[in-house]
Image (cartoon, rainbow, N blue to C red; front, side):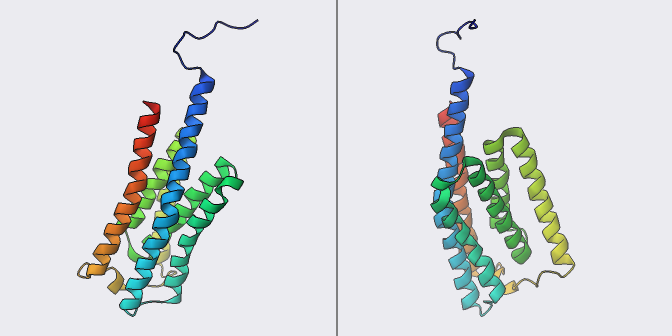
Amino acid sequence: MNGPAPPVGTPSAESVEDTLHQVRARVLLVALNVLAVAMPVVSLSFVWQAYRAAALTPETLIMCSWCLVFPVLRWILPTISFRAAALSLLVALLVCSAMVVSRGGFTVGSLSASILVIMLATLFFGRSGAVTGLVAVVLVIAGTGVLVVQGYIPPVARELWDPANGDMWIRQTLILALLGVVLAITGLYVVERLA
């Protein structure tokens, strides 16, 4: 025997879940679209600045090449599950955050990536994602700090993070603008879809 039908105009649990999944999938796609372009652009600007300051090292090139994971992830998105894509994006952002913190301390980029991890983890996986995202960010930052302080990670090239250097300001502004686009679009899209 079937239970009573929901009142007219009341969304069923199934339709709410469908809508939530659509929102999550759309946010994942938009985030990857923006990050697939933004992260290589930011890395190229960092490499250019390091080159101009005669501070370009193999470590810098390796760390900057990590940004290529974002276009690759965007490219393979149609072939993998939502969960795999969301987890891959969150891990890639955590690794980026750790690399930036290890080389330049707390910057616009590392903090923006960390906030993006917490916000996306919350949207993608609910309360458990929020808690896991926050704990992961704190552990990555703390772990990276220990590695830097103990000397396991090479010292920072100070000229790349000198506040008197105009290139540093341009790079940090670019990072804030690009990651800010992801944060703003995500929040706006969620509010508009769920309103």
